[in-house]
Image 1 (cartoon, helix red, strand yellow):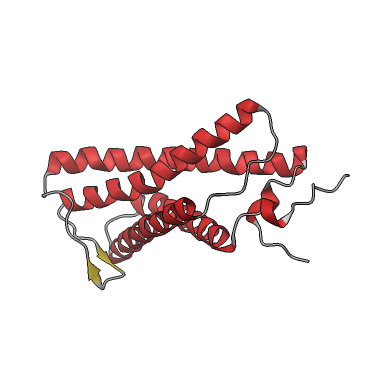
Image 2 (cartoon, rainbow, N blue to C red):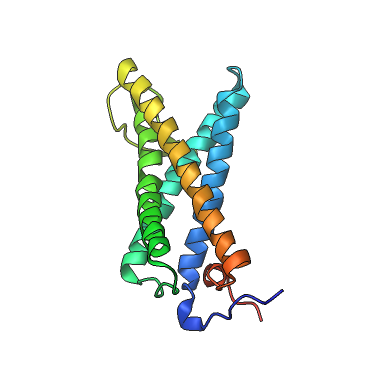
Length: 184
């Protein structure tokens, strides 16, 4: 089987971009998993603890997303690899939607928590302001919005992962290596 294409240093993402990418990926997968698990639990101290962890992860994702966006604005990513126009367009739109959801999902969760009357205290130390006043009807709407946005983010993450794996194993064009540290 042929080896993947060799990627030149200028085609790689910077180390801060890689670190932010993978930290954000782990945080999103973790928060999504905890979110799915905790909603199926009966009311208990364990469920309350998981809700707090989920909120802490959400605030951390929001901050990491801000740092990642600032880094991307400061340091443009390397030029795209040569690929069909439809793939380049799909990648562009997918990345744009991912960035939008990096912010929308945690903000909807924070707003939901505020509307439900439950404060967000990051790591149990930093109380965050309520985004909205307590309102049961609004809380119900925001809960649904948070859930739908999170599922949308999950589907986009799977599409992103699938495309990266397709480029690595089928196209063998070195795309995945651009976001991995160079080990020699």
